Length: 516
Ligand SMILES: CC(=O)N[C@H]1[C@@H](OP(=O)(O)OP(=O)(O)OC[C@H]2O[C@@H](n3ccc(=O)[nH]c3=O)[C@H](O)[C@@H]2O)O[C@H](CO)[C@@H](O)[C@@H]1O
Ligand SMILES: C=C(OP(=O)(O)O)C(=O)O
Image: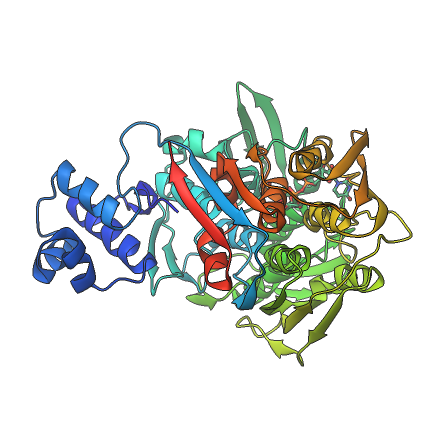
C-alpha cells in the first residue's frame, strides 16, 4: 500500500511529516533502521535523523527510500495505478488473522466528533477508506496520530474549520454522510459534500434525512453539497422509525441521539456488526443504549460528552468471508483466526449445506470485550450448488457485502446457483467478469446472476471492477486459476483491505504488485 501524505497533521512541519512517513513505511515492511540503512547505502544514524525530521531529504533520496521500501513515500502528481500478477492454481496453507472492520472504523472516526475528550481507537485497519475520513477530519482541524502501528489517537478542537473541508477526498467516500449526526449538535448551519464511494448504482440518502429531521436538521442539496440547517430547539418527540434498516442511517441516528438529553428510541434499526461496535463505543462515552443487537435501540443521551476513551473496534466479518472464500475455491486447508462468528453464522450454514467441511474453536472475546470470535479451519471440500437462490438480508441475514463471494464459490461448486443481489442496482454485473477466468456466470437481469459450476479456472488479464467486493472476488478467482493472471487497477481493494496481497503471500499465494 502506498503511504501518502494523509498522515500529515496541520501542526507538524514538513520534515517531520516526511520522517514519520518514512518510519511508517519502514515499519510496514518490517525493517529495522539498520536494514533500511543497508538498502540505502547509508548509516543507521542518518535514517534515524531522517525519521526524526532532523535532516533535509532530497527528492532523489525520497525516491531511493521509496524504492528500498517498495512504497511511494511522496508522489508528485497522480500516482500511477497498481496492478497484480497472480500465479494461480496453488494451494494455500497456514493461518491468517482477520483485521478490524472498515465499516466500524469509519463510523467510530465520525463518532469521535461527538467527544471533547481524547479518543483512542486500537487496532484500526490501515485502509484507504480510513485514511480518507482521517484526511477529511484533519482538513477541518482534527488532530490525529498513529501510535503502535495501528492505534489512532484523535483530538477534536472546540471549533472546527468546516469551510476548509477537503471536498475532493470527502466526495470519494459515502461514509462522509455519517458526519451529519455528530455535526448537527455543534453547528446551526454547515455544508457537507455529496457522499460518493464505489460504483454500485444509486444509493439513496433520503433515509438519513428522514431520520435526522426530528433532531431539527433540514437539508437542501445543491451544487454538489448538502446544505444543512439545524433548529437546535427541536428534539425527537416520538420514536424515530427508520424507513430502511440501513447501517449508516442507524449510525447517524445513534450519533444524533447520543447528545440529546433523555431517551430517544430508534425503531427498524440495523443490528449489524458496525452498529454494535458504535453502540459499545457510545456506551464508553457515557451514553446508555438498551437493545444493542436488536432492531429497537433505546438511547439515553447526554448533553455533553467529554471522556478520554479507549476502544478497539471488532474484526471484519467481510474480510473473514473473503479469506474463507480464498481457502474454499483453492481447495486449501486454511485457518482464519479472529472471525466474528455472530456475523458469519448464516454464511457458514449455507456453506455447510453446500458441502463445506470446517471446524470451529470455542468462542473467545474480541478486544472490545463484547464481540464473540472463533478460529475457523476450512478443509478442502467438494461443493454442490445450494437448492435455493442465495440472497442477502439486513442483519441477521446473509451479509450484503458477503454476497459477491458466493458467486465465486458457486462457480466452484457442482450445479447451478442463482445469486440475487436485490440491494445494489449495479453490482451483479461485475460478477460476469469471472467469465474471463473460465466461469459461466449469466446476467439474468440487473440484480440476478445464474452461475453454472464447477469451473476449470484459467488465468487471464482482467481490468479490476470499480467496486470493492467484486474486485476482491476476481482476485480470489485468480488464486484458483491455473497459470498467470493480471488484475489491472487494483487500488480500489485498498479501500477495504489492508495489504491483502502481502498478507496472502505467507499462506503460499503467489502475487506480485507492479505499476506501469
Ligand atoms: C460504511 C458502511 O457501513 N457501509 C455499509 C453500509 O452502507 P450504507 O448503510 O450506507 O448502505 P445503504 O444505505 O447505501 O444501503 C445499501 C442499499 O440497500 C438498500 N436498502 C438497505 C436497507 C433496507 O432496509 N432496504 C434497502 O433497500 C438501500 O436503498 C441501498 O440501495 O451498509 C451496506 C449494506 O449492508 C454495506 O454494503 C456497506 O458496506
Ligand atoms: C459497499 C461497501 O462499502 P461502502 O458503504 O463503504 O461503499 C462495501 O464495503 O462493500
